[in-house]
Length: 521
Image 1 (cartoon, rainbow, N blue to C red):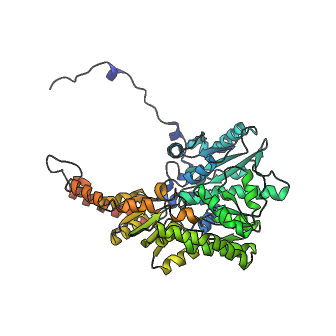
Image 2: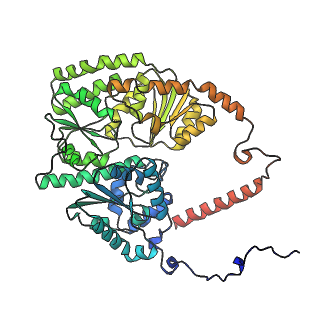
Image 3: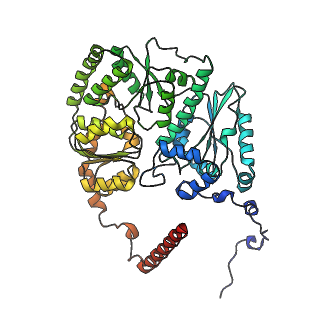
């Protein structure tokens, strides 16, 4: 045998063998290293750590669907994005380093223009309570009233499961508000609903300030007319269009919640009516109702939706039938004309996790499209009941808390001219030669309300449907290159071992049975 070939003396260097410091400490409540997909184990640990009341409130506000773990990106991205969009608001995360890295990366990918604070931890600081002391120290160091109106501190999965008590942080430091929230993946089903967690917490804080005494007016001044607060992130043109529709009622469009600065929270709470355009903001609705504000669901999309919404807004504010009719007559003919001028022809399946899926489906149907299936990862609430009833009257199958499997099964069964959905749904559609559009970037990032919304979707939808020929050509071109184990180009047959797979499947089945038996004991 020939001697080993070496190129330097690196193999002769003496290496000191050690062990990680974490090995000296017990794992905190058995959760260190687990994540949002650990499901029941993380929730069990959180309840043992004293967070049962918070988790019960999450379960009431955001009821789980058929799956007990998020199928979208980390839910905390929703609340993180809300905080990063607000002026003079700092954001601090407490969680596993890998989670913080991913959240920071995706926040900057989506255009964040400021740093994300991070308080690291290990098993020792988690067990001894030093992590909370580190968080409190970092908040004190950050609380500069010249720079910030508020600091948002967010517990991710592991600190929540370990019971890190953000509620013990001071309410304010040097005049800077401190808002602590828990956004665990095992308690919040979608990142859309995590936006509500922070929006609700901020509204609760602002409502307490209003009740305590005078507060600052919005930078742009107070409206000369009663306002309608708009609940849910929407395309920038939509609030302006809504404002035009409200003018005949003697109303104006108020702040959009989640807000862009702290003062807008006061103006939102001062609004005469709240429009729950996105229906999953349960915690925010609770704060508005506590402030005595009536809440109206659905949104002014399409002709039918706009007519009904204006009627409901008018009733909530106490407008006369003549005022409502005037508002309807001022906008409905233009919407009907825009819908007729930009028809959509084809069968479309629609799914997503933004919360506006039912609204988009209404607009597509009024534009002429056939929409047999709508799936949303968000839950059924009183604020989307009218949309559900309207769609089902048109023969649409509406699926709340839809899973990826539900959406893909519907798309495969219907074989539509176009599939609108999340990334994996669109990927699956294109594999089948069906044109697909990503809901978040290509659909929800367009105006939906009033006349502007009536013609906004037709161009992109019709162009995508017209791509069917190209999809068929690409499918034929790549046909035969293989899928799964045989994907790619092989000079010979791949070395498949189905016997190994069968053996491993039996092993996993035995482990599942043993775990089930242990639960029964």
